[in-house]
Length: 73
Image 1 (cartoon, rainbow, N blue to C red):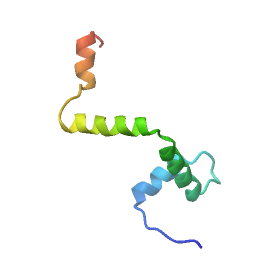
Image 2: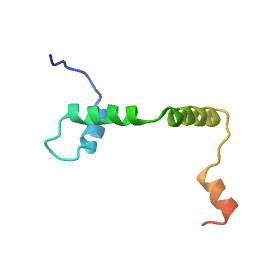
Image 3: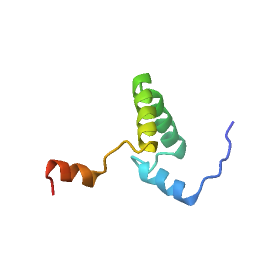
Image 4: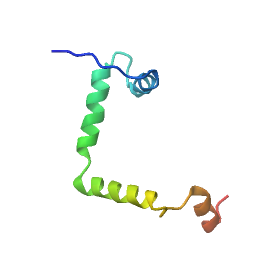
């Protein structure tokens, strides 16, 4: 059974941009995104959560800071 969902025009544009070929359906794109998410290992998911905590706590370097530290212009 099919269903209809509402999405913003911005999200629709993002989905269109993700199409690998013009005949690909939104369902195909969404399935691919879900499969990609499922493919992340538990360790990767844990690392992502830790990184989110670090960012919220201000424990990160900006690109400009790293460039300055390593002498990159």
